[in-house]
Image (cartoon, rainbow, N blue to C red; front, side, top):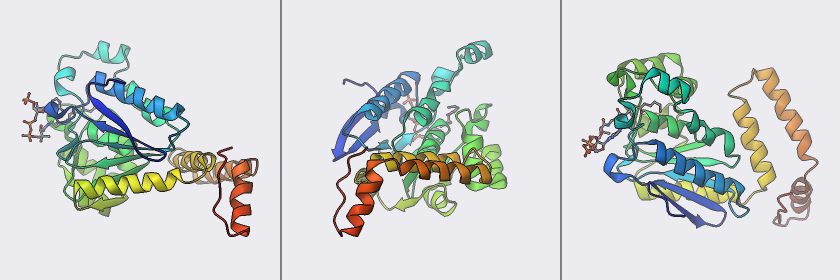
Amino acid sequence: HNYEYIQVSEPRPGVGQVTLNRPKALNALCTPLINELNSALREFQSSDSISAVVLTGSERAFAAGADIKEMAPLTFSAAYRGNFIESWSELTTALKKPLIAAVSGHALGGGCELALMADILYCTRGANFGQPEIKLGTIPGAGGSQRLTRAVGKSKAMELILTGKSFSGEEAERWGVAARVFESYEELLKGALDTAETIAGYSRVAVQAAKEVVNKSQDLALRDGVEYERRVFHALFGSQDQKIGMKAFAEKKKPEWSHQ
Ligand code: HXC
């Protein structure tokens, strides 16, 4: 594939990587970039050799937001009728495989929201997160007001979104937005790829089910979520990999997954 705004690779066994690559605009997320990202993720989703995906940017910027120059002339009717930004959520709905965001540098506005869509977020200590839309006379539009609020609580989210002040990677980790923080971009990328490779070593059936039930916790009341989890847990007794995994444990062997 010849992408203009992203780079796609398979750096480890079972691991796909998408690197946002629009350096002149600090990876501002113009529509063609999002289309390329969706296309790459769709391909990883249908690939039999990929089990987990890492999404990163450059050392300087994960993404500095939606493309302000593209949005500036947009009218209400064009945004409404074209359902502007809807295509971004393909990421969260179409990809059943775990997505790890590795954030270094700026992750602002839509860039912060994109990172928040990932299943696992890693960042550098000096990463620069924020929802500065208020400074442009608008508000987060790709789930920031919802996902950031679930991640950090109402008061802190309100403060961040109403002031537009940014927060560091160190704060992101302290508040639970990021699962882990790293000292450099190189260590960040290695950490993300290591985790993706670990996940790629497990049954794809179980991994997809695990991602699905954790994500349900964001939408369902606790009782419904626990019941949903139990049903999916029951369903996994119908997989070959549950038999393979438990038999291997009993025999003190390494499981050879069939991914069935
Ligand atoms: C378009 C952008 C951009 C953006 C940076 N650039 N961010 N272009 N959209 N979001 C461009 C600049 O115009 C500039 O292009 C080049 O990238 C380098 O940026 P500089 O500003 O020169 O770099 P620097 O001085 O290092 O400052 C970095 C920065 C600043 C602090 C990240 O660029 C900045 O504040 N960017 C905007 C951040 C923002 O407001 N994001 C939220 C957008 S609204 P030229 O051609 O001049 O060299 C949003 C809404 C989401 O995301 C709603 C739904 C998705």
